[in-house]
Structures are given as structure tokens and as C-alpha cells.
Length: 71
Image (cartoon, rainbow, N blue to C red; front, side, top):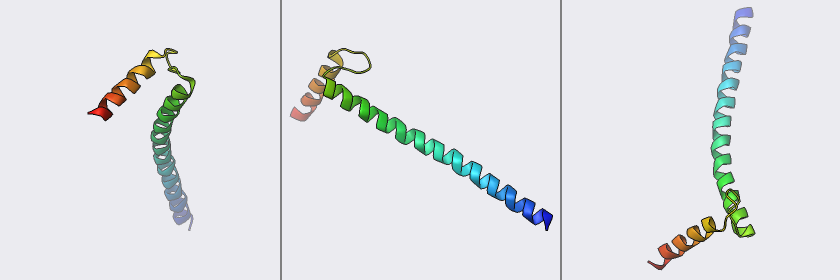
């Protein structure tokens, strides 16, 4: 009885640790994707690059984007 209970607890603990690790990896991936979108949105709203505080970064991205659309 004690051994089966101990095996159950160990199995649940292993499942918990595996699930937590997998959840952290997925959360980090989704967070990185969302952060890049938020930085781009803030840069376009403010009119300058939030990271380097120059307007040249955004102008290059917009001009290269427009160039790709025209082709």
C-alpha cells in the first residue's frame, strides 16, 4: 500500500515537472513573438524606433516594405 502510494506521488510529481517545463517553453516562445509585435506597434505609433530612439530605423523598414509591395 505504501509503495503504490509512493509510486503514485512520484508519477504525479514527474508529470507536474514535465508539464511546467513544457509550459514555460511555450510561454517564452509566445512572449517573444508578442513582444516583437508590441515593439513594432509602439515604434509606428510614436514615429521613432523605441529601441534606438531614431526615426531612421522605421523609415528604412517602411521604405523597404513599400519597395516590396511595388514589385
